[in-house]
Length: 237
Image 1 (cartoon, one colour):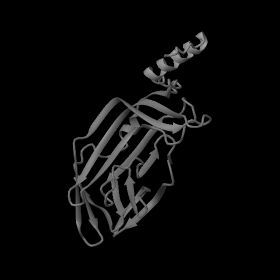
Image 2: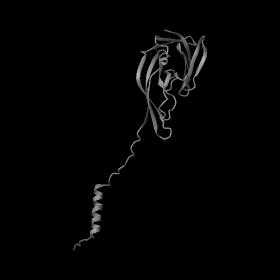
Image 3: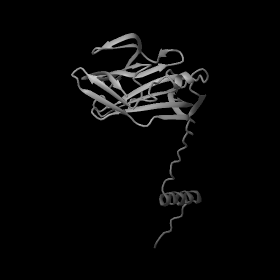
Image 4: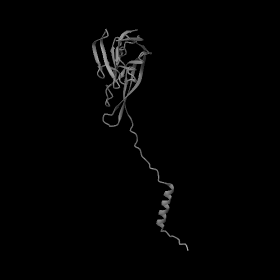
């Protein structure tokens, strides 16, 4: 004769609840994420080039630069279309001076005057521009930052180099000072050519490369130097 098993009511409810949980599985874990920290953007405002700055680069009527190397090899640089833009927006990002892991993006609007020179023999480009700029970390300062700058960058002078973010020549036209370790030479002589008031500055590329440029206010770029080649300006037209 079969016997019926009688379970107390609380035990029966516990059994039913356990079986229900087995059927439905464990509930999903809900992760509450912290909201992302909003980026910090500081607007430095509008910078318009002075008349002197716009006239500083002597390339208004020049389209060809011919350099000659120590081995008498000629390097022809041809200018692409010159550019003058107003209200061009630039941004630079620096670490926040007090908040660890946070960055500050500084935005500013400026006039830009730019000339680009292409040398097919070297597969290289030199970009000469005058624009509003700053070189030091503002550390949240927003006024008295922007000045007229001469910026000259080169690409292709070292094997595998990309467009250089840091200019080879970076000169503050407003304060007559370099951003970095540039020099202003009263006289400069090389390969039998002599120039006066020459801006000289260089930038490192990787561990064994560099690009050193020489600039004169009346002639523009008068020499360039990188591993294996040094050349000076022979003529411009």
